[in-house]
Image 1: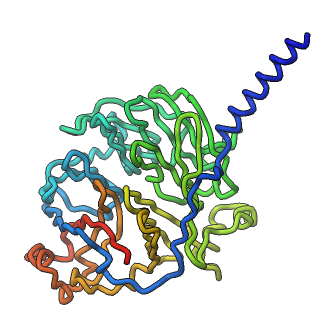
Image 2 (image 1 turned 180 degrees about the vertical axis):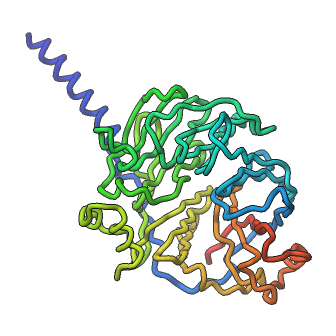
Image 3 (image 1 turned 30 degrees about the horizontal axis):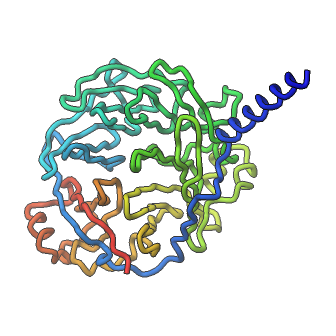
Length: 381
């Protein structure tokens, strides 16, 4: 009998430890990063830069870029309507713009993912569809079944047909559990679930690209959170905790103060407090870059992993001492150990362009032209 009780006790302890592993989110080996107070910054923090002018023609008139990736020396990007590919020197190659509800068609693409084998996945949250294409010719292959309707974002785990989805609590209101991250196979069968967030989880306001892969480790940063987690199909561990000088994300009490999301977002947008409402993360081997909104303004924070130095600045206040047109190239993606930034022609001061390579690219450009990409690293002194 004692032996039986001992076995039961051991099994209970093992189950408790496994549950803790799945639910435990704040680990002591995480890194705290303070980007510091807002400071004056010059464009000379940019180093190792390369400019790419994206070709403009009747087939590729890009609206606002939602996501951009470089894979096998080709540029892939998505706007509100289409998915495009360009060569690494900016020449237009191909696009997907199947507007509709049929096989391989989408109405409002939300995000995309390119797996390690060259498979292209496009999510249309409005149609509740995840579609797979051949990256070489953009031919439609199959639909991937979703575990629940309207995921906010998704990722594909390397070398596995395993998909992870991030849901707001509002989009899965008919589901009893409070988890927001689900793992499922291509048939939509749930394999694991994790991350119980705070009350902000009911708000559908955040980036559709809050998963990213860094050194074969999957990262995720939840909406209205200053935390970045490392994710596996068994565990979620805190990797980074971020702070931004005097600015912070809204207090949890705000999300229980009102009965509806509209009133919550109205106070965030127009209230007396300057809260961070939206964050994008871009990590390289040497740098952690964070782009975020306060009210209607963009801010950018950089943290150098080698020197532990940081800078935090308002996008519109950067002094252009490089002569690249008056604006800082907002980070939108990563390529190798560099960031992918964009400069919009309509946002440039042509009289300020002095940088030789940029001046050459500006020949014949108009305000309606497609963006100029800037591949760059950052040097913090």
